[in-house]
Length: 247
Image (tube, rainbow, N blue to C red; front, side, top):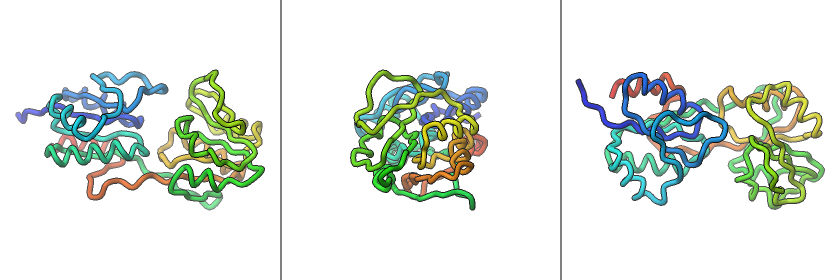
């Protein structure tokens, strides 16, 4: 029998949870790494490092100390820095590496999408009088410092008593999942004219796009960062498990 080392799951996307459960069922030794605590998921059932790595050397030292031999990268689709660091470390330390990245959303004939390379570019394209709903979180509010619209609504998955940093911004609290009908009602109540979101893909959060389609709203879609070249990639947990079993 081949002796396996530790499998590291870089978490951040919801796929990490299903992946870890299946790996544990196979009897694998698994650890996880998260850039920040998750608020909308249950805790990962394996030892988990939380926080960004200070630099490339810190990541590589940690991988050596944990005796990692295989990395399955199920980090968030927009965690470009984490992906770059991990790919580089895997190459330098000769570790097996796989990226799990669900398919992107694509517009249909009824959709009114505009594509942008960054959230800041999407924010700059907002015109006067527009009422915008954005679900990219408060951590990205600096992209809206030159906002020209009438109102910006930022979704928060947990209530907050903090005031938004800009007078034109308002926080909207809620708890996922957000059904399409609920999104339609919310967009009508807030008189939204444009939705800004990042292309994370998948079915879990597509309801806001279906609601925007139904209401005829403009959508500013922020494209994913380009992945490092020539890295193996799959779209599903099932494919990732098949890859892991072949190692």
